[in-house]
Length: 235
Ligand code: G3P
Ligand code: MG
Image (cartoon, rainbow, N blue to C red; front, side, top):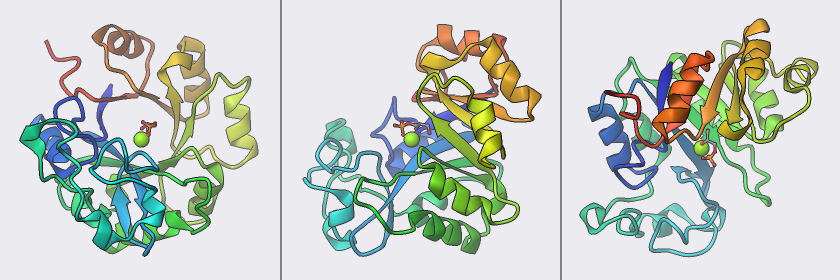
């Protein structure tokens, strides 16, 4: 089962910072996940919340903040003093951290009032950096995934967060059956996994931070877990 460092090794360093990504690499993670948004002036940055309040020294919305303003903020000291000085990184900086054998799951976040085609800019940057083979694009916004699926050779993971009645039928009907179904850990059982596998889809689950659930998911054939602890299943 694939172990995916969720927001980097975010159990050991502030989420979605270069420190968390380097830590994931050092710990030997073979896959990583992080969240991407666009600043007011169109820069792609790696941060989870739409608001700056929880994980930086700033306040307000990421999409209403320019990159020049953002780079003055501290994104590490909320976690611990040891990480003071960490920044909200650019997507390009983050993509430079990973070795070529790592799988990179980029989650595209779109806030309520975000109307820009963030996904196309993300795609273009990944393409320009020659990383398409390493990247899986994912989002809870399935419209944005649909747009990406018009591009040949792209891998897409469809994020869902509820116990849908017929998720596979939904994916097939909407042309979203591409690579994986990324489901909330609360709603995965053996049948879910079997149904996805029967249609050639992988199942990834977020967020799994206990060994017990990790081992259970491994036993029922889940293909990968997003975890804050890349060493979760180590002995
Ligand atoms: O991509 C998996 C997971 O990160 C989705 O939820 O809220 O942690 O971005 P969230
Ligand atoms: Mg995420």
